[in-house]
Length: 299
Ligand code: ATP
Ligand code: ZN
Image 1 (spheres, rainbow, N blue to C red):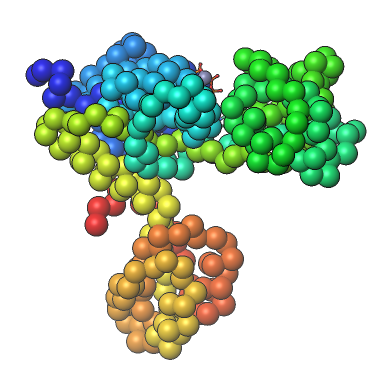
Image 2: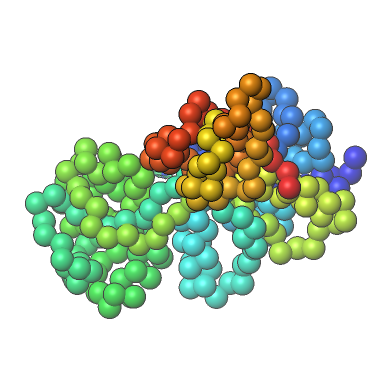
C-alpha cells in the first residue's frame, strides 16, 4: 500500500503520555507488532502508522504535515502556539478531541515560608520555568513585571539554589513540589492530552480512516465514563429510583421468577457512579446492586 493512503500518527516515544496514548490506540482496535519500540511502526489491521517521537516535536510534525495526527499535552501546544505567534510564523493545526488523560496544571509555586497574596506578590521576582511564553502571558495578564528564567529541566530545585524566587512548572499530585519545600500558589493553565490534526487536506482514504478512528476514540472515551448498573427493586419505588440515577438512559426492567413485587433493573449510566449514589439506591429499596465497567460502546 502507498504511504499516502496510511494515516500517520505521532505519539510520545517515552514518558508520561506514552502508555495512555498507546492504550487508547489499542482500545480502538489497532494491532501493533511487538517490536513496538521502533521509531516507526505499522498497524497490522488498519491503514495507520505510528511515529514515536519526543512530545515537544509533535506539534511541529503535525503543523508541517509530516504526520496527519498527534497526541500531545495542551501545555506543549499552547507554549509552542505562543512562540509561533511571537515569531510571526503562521503554524496551525486543528484540535480534534480532548482525551482526558495526562491531566496536569502549569502552576506558580513558591517556597513554603514565603507569603503569596495574589499575582502582584511576583512583582520583580525571578521565576524559573520551561514554559517562558505561557509564563510571560500570565504575567502580562496580571500586569506583573518579573524576570523569566528559562531552564530546560529540574525547575523545582531553582529556589533552593537561590537561582529563583518562584517557579512555574507542571504539577499533577504536588508531591514533587512538597519534596522541594514548595507550595502551589496559582494556576497558569490546566492541561490534558489532546488529539490534533494537520490543516493539510487528507486523501479520501485517509479521511475515511480518520473518521473511523474518531468514532472509535469517542466510543472508548464514552465507555470509560460509563457504567452498567444492575439491581433488584420494588416496583413501587421505580420512580424514585430513576430520579437517583445520573445520566441514565431508559432502564430495562425484567421480571423476577416467582417474585411479584420486585423487578430487576439494568441501566447504563454515562456518568461516574459513586458510593453515595449506590447508598441512595439502597435507601430507596434497591438490593443486589452491581456496577460493571463497559468495554466498548457504539451508538
Ligand atoms: P520528552 O522526552 O518526550 O520530551 P518530557 O520529559 O518532556 O518528555 P514527560 O515528563 O514525559 O515529558 O511529560 C509529558 C507530558 O505529560 C507533559 O507535557 C504533560 O502534558 C503531561 N504531564 C502530566 N502530569 C505531569 C507532571 N506531573 N509533570 C510533568 N508532565 C506531566
Ligand atoms: Zn518534552
